[in-house]
Length: 510
Image (tube, rainbow, N blue to C red; front, top):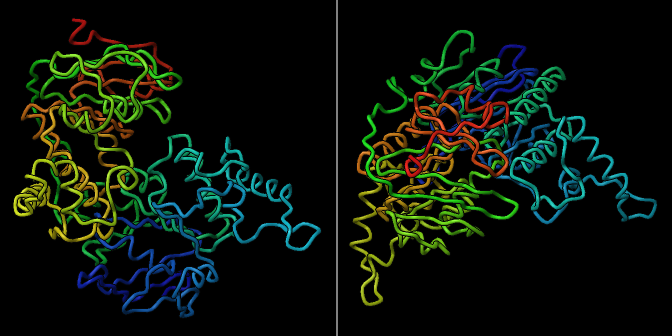
């Protein structure tokens, strides 16, 4: 091991129920660097960092820190070794305040033994947030009341508060706005200067190239190699990750639009969004872009009946409909792939079969009895068509990688044969190959006449997949762009209020 290498994980192997997650991986990293770890979902990234953080015990291999072997048999042991991890799944205590979460286990004591000095605690928590550049968070607020992005900031503050030597960041940018992401990157530079080793896991390769000093690629539980950003490019990195070139990232398609299938007129919900009007045609992929807090998700949930609007109307195939619940939406032929698959889209403790079947149980129930053979046949077709791995119906969803969990969530809605499919951040937290699979599925659905409303924070995705793009800002629809008009600059300027309202006539306004 080079004298500069502070961390060495040598020959690490781990299997789950006969599935080999890591195969003799040897990985090293230095103090004062950002070392990115990339790979497809299921490549072994999460298992590797869980071994390092003490959350998972490895079957073989050894871990050395500063040249000395260490036993990281629990998160406590990892903490004692100066390791902190910020996972995709938050470890916050929802009913406790921001202060209590950040200072958990180290609250300042008052003059009376056993009493907390709350004033000092709040000052300390606020000072930590201020030092990190995380503003706009009330430290007295229970974290359950915070937005997801603010919860992410609290999670990071909690990890950084104890000055770790090794900080693991697992997909930290997935829920952050561009401005919040800039603050995170600035913080990472500060930590680098203080000789902290940062392990950065992300599917967003543009971020990896921006912040990483070195990049390690895993594939199928094995180490492919470690490269420097200046010695490679995204194309070469993708080839290392998936073992093949991807060709065109977004499928080439010529949109063949049919008649209007969905029309939204004057939809409003007090304090959330106002006067939303647009139309969607059969075979069209309509992009909906906006910055965090613009109201995109709330509009989608209103159309789906999860948060009914106060005013306005929805027309489906030219007929007015009043969608009062998700059940009614499904019966009408409207489906919604939710933004947060783990909270709203899946039952993690249930199997692939049970999750995929959830929306269509009445179709395989006769006289009160489930036709399991029919149900299994339908689920098996979805597993094959979406390439869900491993292809085992009885596998619990919580045991799947993020990309395969997203495919299960999507399969559940595809079985409903919806006429209108709303996709809210469909590729968040999934690997490059899974993204390509999802884009292929979207294109095929549109070709079959399904109307798709695509909500995404990723501008390349919006531009690459949409036939037309709508832009929201502060609860209002402020822009509409044809495919030829849309660019990253124009959409961002419109979303930020730097471009005067841009609307082309909708199909029904013609």
